Length: 189
Image 1 (cartoon, rainbow, N blue to C red):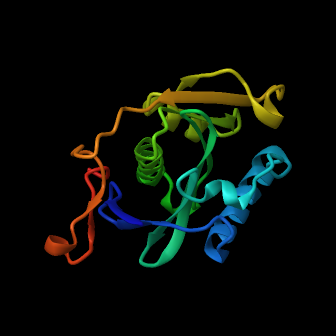
Image 2 (image 1 turned 60 degrees about the vertical axis):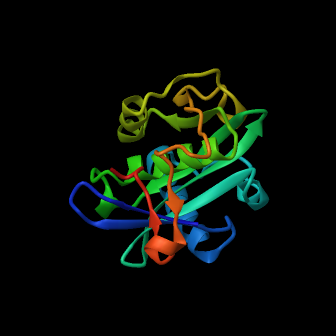
């Protein structure tokens, strides 16, 4: 699976699904972990099993510009109709250009296509730019959960996803006969 989009400054981005334990995915996960170390003084302690991010119960996306990984995001099943967004990361040189929104939009869309009705995530007070993005995208407070449920700076957010129908015009699709296999997406518009 690959989706294409364009950043606010016109730079083309490709979102590519990878196994969580793929070397490119692991490098991006390490970059987000180092971001946590810089902001919070330690790595994310939430337990993650790479198998949780395999379709249809999960997905890991790597964002690439000219073949170079510049961001990531993932979701995994949390229960009936509920998915959790994890590992949203945008490399410093690509921040404030719309990449985070492209990734979240794709995560929400693919979770909805897989049958999930809502998503949750946890972030922290030391990630104000992420919190602003989530607020702009319609996320609101939810009940704390997981290893950070009692952490004083933890922020827990969620959002109901729109229903997706097989013929919905807002989903990415592949029409091999008219686009030579290239995927067309309206999620990036």
